[in-house]
Image (cartoon, helix red, strand yellow):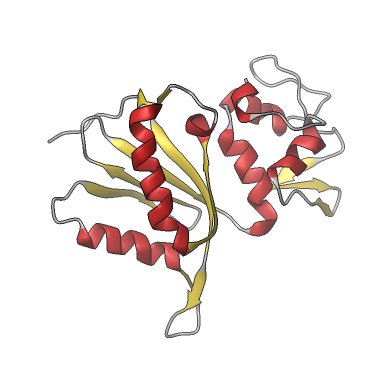
Length: 189
């Protein structure tokens, strides 16, 4: 069966998303639904998730994310072949459920220092996220005003003031730094 990615009703997707969060939660220090589902959009095309995976040491005393094992187990137990890994990188994992319509889970992998930035950026929407990383003295390609203080820059998902990292461990820290206050996800446009 060929699957096509289309938008589905949030109310139909939420039981699947909540089950996924419950299944993967033990493999993560933190896990959060972001994207259009978090913003409460009625139609969504995927489930975006930001997480900090728990790690354990492998036989060579190297850190290994437990999330990788959870996803491998999920795929190994999938006797009907409805789950497919489509991206398997160190900073992003994506798998799809080959159902009609196809449904994708995007895991954005991060650490505690980048948590606030990743949650804010991936909650979106895209135009708002661009404003969060555009200096105030400039506009985005769409002509929206930049929200980032002009003395800062973004590098490796961190805000920098010269050679100093500006800590943004929580999403509220990113919003206070850029917008000046908390903005509910559903109000971000």
